[in-house]
Amino acid sequence: MGKKLKYLIVCVAISLLLPSCAALFGDKEDEQVDEIFKQGAIDPNLIPQTVGYVPVYPFFQGFVNPVDVFVGYDELIYVVDDNGLNILDQKGTKYQTIAIPGATDVTQDRRLHTYVAGRVELPRGPGGAMINLAAVYHLKNTATGNYEIIDTLIHPDCDASRGATAFRGADDEKVQFTGIATLHDNTLYVSRTGPRNDPNAFFRPDNGLLLFDAAGSNTGFANGLTPNSPSLKSALGISSVATLAAPPQRQQGINTGKSFLITQADQTANIEYRVLHIMVLDDPDAGTSYNETSSLLNYDCTKGDKFLYQPFRFKKPEDCFIAPDALQYSFIVDSGTDSIYIFTNQGIEGVNPPANSGLRKQVVVSFGGPGIDGSSSGPFSFKDPSGVCYFRRMIFVADKGNNRICRYMLSTDLE
Image 1 (tube, rainbow, N blue to C red):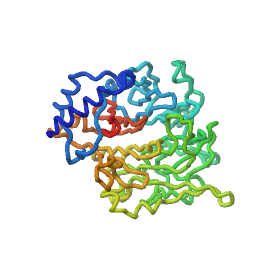
Image 2: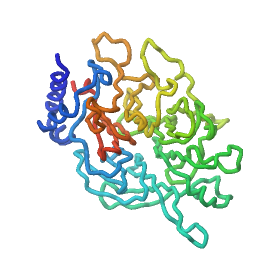
Image 3: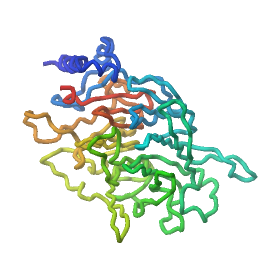
Image 4: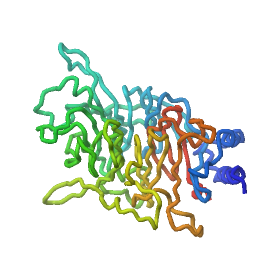
């Protein structure tokens, strides 16, 4: 059977989904199928013939350098780009844009409070001059259209360790908040990068992870993550953070674990493991510890051919996300390879093989890079992908260089 015919079967399967899916995903037009064939069929080197991801059209357009995407607990789609925070429904209809200066990341907690990492200008310079600082905007009522910014976490004031230290001028302006994620109890994780990284200093290193409670108070720091040198628990230029808690709300509860993934996109260091799984353990006596997951170095080649902790697997990972369903796949977008990678919770690259397929190893379904014609704008190609999330079996990718949000579903989920 030819590749085009196989793909046509998949597209027909999409069109025969329940009628409610048309409202959720948008209508499927014949010209959209034609466009898939025009831009490039499935590349067998990237998408195995047995199983792979297929695009869900339409892709969402009309953004200016979109760098992150998140589907909230309210089931709205949040996209940050040069204009700020864009709010869309599940069809991709944009009904509000909130101006957030320098917006780079977005997430939402279980109270339906939305957080956006960006920048703020304050009169902190010599003679009251305005300076630009990292900030996290805390919003509520974004689903109603009458949003309210109820708090702003601003560097360095939001870091409890900086209460007795002087403002550092240009060095504090260089600090960035690079990733945000929440836990089941509305705790907020904020990843940070910056130039001051002396682990023996009174104040915390700039490179690391800050913890805030639901009220916005800084309750801790991920102690033990090394800020200067690569390791299995380093924090060298963190570009994103992902926790085990994510939408949608579920009757069986939400994952209460505190462990997380981080990506390290710093290009000034030779980083062997750029995506790290950090185990968080609470001890009543010793307190909270942040530990490397060295077990991911034990490659089980009977179950897979590629692995999360394979040396130099990534070039410039920009974002990560952990699926909240039972499979807990991890998704990584890498702007250095213009690709998305999918791993199991055991660190094996790929997804489960179809039942009765005879396959015994995880099927590698990662994709991206230049298309079949060298184009970077085809349905399976990206240009500087910078954000990723997962919601109800669908992957959303913020394809920054193509000014679009791409959507994909696993072909086996369409059966």
